[in-house]
Image (cartoon, rainbow, N blue to C red):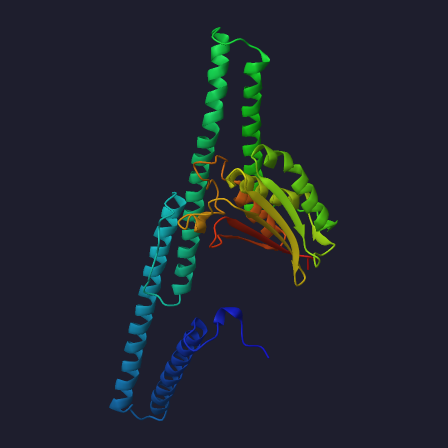
Length: 346
């Protein structure tokens, strides 16, 4: 059964209800006016003068109709004028523009959609400026190191040997990694990141990720362990490169925050038909004031370094797989990162 076109809406107080009510009132008005005019015409054709009450009724109906039409036209014209002025301000770059309430009820939904659009534009513009400021800040330090060292070599203050050149190469790698992370993050946020899905063994992904970080864990005096549950699934539809990148970011954070002599544990298990990766560390945990922003860009603790992009990238990559990621701070301390993705993509 058809409920009418989408623009008519549903519900007791919805726009469709108001539209139908207004249409019924207008139809009743037209019927009443036609009936009165027909009565007047019948009286004239029969040679009788219209009775005074008919003349008054017709005049009243015409006056009321003109007043109602003028009122509707005034409200619509004023509302359209407000919308046009707001659109001009937005076109000029003022994304703080809001229309709010307008006299015309039928245009209420349009103005509400307009305000939602400008709110999104304002949010995107703020994020763009914040991103540019963050990128400039992150690139400033390595560029200053490179420039200072090169100027010192050219002025003869430092010898131009491998000992001086090697740190410069390391700084260029830092900038390259930052730019690649930003590229991955921007593509994921824009929804244009392409996943090369294939059936892979999650055990192999976990083992290779742990093996790749054993050296870094050893340098930090952190024990790195892998625990595979008996119910761990043997296959998952995923992009092995991106899934490995997720675990790499989680392990980097865990090892960086883990004090010397502690351990980092990677667990693999199943939750129904989903695959679950868990990374636990014995670090100080996530401060309560930072927990809501832990997956935002450039959110990093000041004492451990890092660009603050790792968890933001991990979140976008997990979501691209149709999964979820959450950060939990147990009561006993440390941080528990939990990634859950479906074993099979729909």
